[in-house]
Image (cartoon, rainbow, N blue to C red):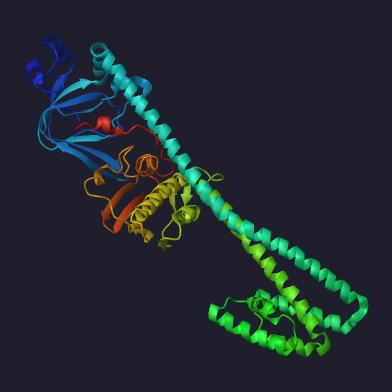
Length: 497
């Protein structure tokens, strides 16, 4: 939108705090290079357009907004004389993209001193060379520092996840090793028993009967269901008494194994009816080897399945074998993150999943969304732990209009009202020195807002803090992949209004 040009008065622009220290010659030069324009209520420039001008407000009311998803969100509104916006980074030239990083409109007739971006850049370099160098160093230094610390933040998270994954993998791996060693011993005993049988002590019919009983026992083990502790204890007593009554040695030791395999006294009666009394002890011993072997193989299968599941979760979390941008089920991402963080979450935090499974898949950068989930879960666990007690983390998904909501709710002490507006600022942290970089929420905000065109907000009260991520259900532009630098420098410098 073009304004209506009016005469530029050096005396008037000298009354603006930005120019009050300039000499008459410099003020005259500004009036020659720039212009005063009067804008009627409406837009002045739009976010994403080439940044061609630097604006300093003389009088009126100006509003700055940012595009979040499909909405324009107001970030600043003021009537203060001298506030400025627009091509503030023109002095950096081609080193950064020269586009407007916000939209500006006026709500009443408003006058601006307008300076073309090229003129502003030339004046900065000519009149304030040292300041221009300092600002350039500050800009890129801050950007590099933020990128380096952001990388450290990711490495710290990776280290924590690696430690948690190692812990989670160790348990099933150790179980598989123990079960394998025991299985080797049992197979050796079964070979010894087979050698004993082959000496001809048992008839062919007896051996065939034992093998049939063995096969039916294997089927019974495969169908076994878990009993409650009380039910298991009662059945163990029944089996131990039956074994004692039938002169089976160490019945107290065999009973728990048989109960775990789903066997009962009725089953043992069927075994006793199938063999003669003199070989019943040997038959029971043979069944015990069979049951133990099957249970050990089940334990090995469960352990290796658990390991495979953890490895799959790690791959899902890291997205190492996936396209960087694709359509994803957020529930799969959430589950893999919670599994990866289970060691860090610990037993004192109860995790509740309140998922709306009817939600559609969404276009996203899944590896980076997992980073967001990690940061938000980590903050929730820290908040709950800061109270010294137990708490609950609720992860909820729902649909809100044309967006998908992912909410992380914790029962921690809450975010104090006086710092709530700063928690997304770079380097701001409430964690002790060495425990946080202050970039977790800043990086999360960039990923959600800049890269996914969504929003990230917080609602907090003692015992009820909710971080809410809203993601578009469709790509911003059909058939296109959104591009944004998550590590880009914050745009606050261009939002000085």
